[in-house]
Length: 212
Image (cartoon, rainbow, N blue to C red):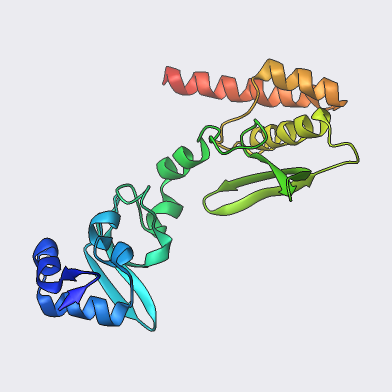
């Protein structure tokens, strides 16, 4: 029997599975050649299960090393080797801090980390700030005015940095301290001294930790 022009026996040999198992995948899972024949290799999973009209993967967590059953659409090709289960994701500070400290992506449309231009039919309607930590959306705000000039964009980026400082979050900021203070004065913000005090206290705490 053939599947997409390939002998079932050949597919079975490739995946080191029985022909009956491959036949089950083909007839029951209802997936095409790209999503099925190479699914185990592509997603680095141990087993594929079909339950209640849903496709599940059996995959090993990269942190706790336990086999977990997950929905197939919750894993991507990019994180197939670094994927971790939800328990490790929510309770492992290292993973969360690495995610939070990511640099600006190539697909960014504003030039600032965590700020994207909200567009409809190519027209910019505002600048969206989004800040997520431990799978929780901490900041989700749209900045817009009649002109949508550079000042609006800078305000969005500055407010994100201020939120990070005030909440002591591990996220990467857009501005250095000097740049942030200058932009706060440009925007007419009055809490410059307060932010300076917070940053000085953090520096002092960091120095004490290094001396221990």
